[in-house]
Length: 228
Image (cartoon, rainbow, N blue to C red; front, side, top):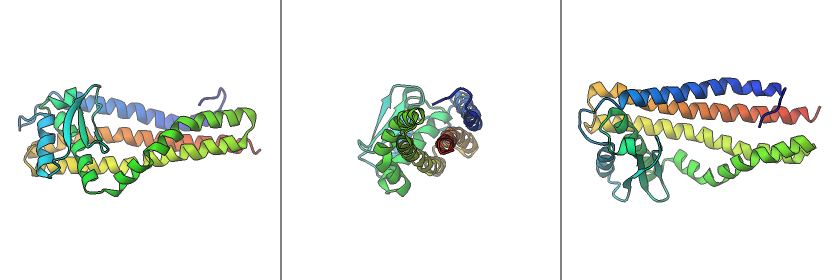
């Protein structure tokens, strides 16, 4: 939601810069380390399968999914989906991403509280992100303070989702590096490279959270301007 001559838009500039930087960093890291094969010679899919077997998650399946860096774990269906450039690749980048998604599966199996909380609020967070701006915009244009308040409350749910996502993602990345190293799926010399890939990916979540928080602050300022 943008307004010409709206000074609150300036609040978003740091987050926009961070988002662009994070996206460039993750693309560069993936491009660099996708060219370097892991010493194990295993593909991303094979590493995920080995780790799932090692931690006795026999009810989780691994499959490929279309899209660029579209890798994710589906806790409802217990399916670990890897993008094509990760599923069949033996690169360090692919192994790190596959292990990261496996980390989410392990979080789910162990009842990691932050993941459980995030999964629980996904429906309301999705509704909040879809309805918040239309409601706030209508309230702002037509002077409906109740609509603006409803938009702020709904968007707050989306912000909470982003905040909860941070520990979930950082924990999965930490698990990934540890699991790969402890199970001899990467060598000591590959730890730093794997961590670089996952750290770059984590920065995109930090950028998304920063954008959400600043956007919420912006809505609050705009709402306050209607009380003047």
